[in-house]
Length: 265
Image (tube, rainbow, N blue to C red; front, side, top):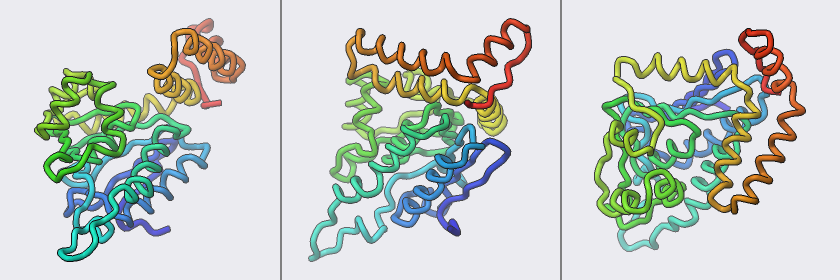
């Protein structure tokens, strides 16, 4: 497939997916969603890939849904668009793909992340932003509810009071405050943003991939579990990972006082 709305590049075992509609602040349309499905399926299938970096082209990360996209356009005198169908068809599968991807994910937020763009970033395992970036829950400005997992991610990350304030008041949240609140992992100086993202991607690309993904799965499950259920889930993952080649390598490296060479197996 020839991509026109995204860029997808492989650099060794690091996959880089760039939303590439800079003239539209990388906002979503149907074509971009179709291309994202293809790219994420490739990440899922290509066993050589060990980490995914998701970012935006130009000055913004993603401005959310493109309101000029035919499937959401409001035409005077015509029937209203079925916004629920757009969520079910495009945004729900996108977030579930990211949350269930077989490799760890990094959102490199290089500018404004608004609406669905903000939730897209929060669906990744680690979110790092340049200090000039910001996050915006813009839905109330157009009479909608946060989607793309926004109502799930926000309360868990920053608590109900702050989540409600962000959603109802639709004000910009700076990257630095987002980091202070625990919404994202880190905000770094703009000049250090690219090398910091590269270093983080390199670190994860040689980490024990399966263990990182099982960690994500355990943390995702925790809010819906009792302590006993969570302890049992941890035991199951520990049993599986204890039989893995990466665990054997990690122990051997520790005993040998050397750096481990993980394969993700």
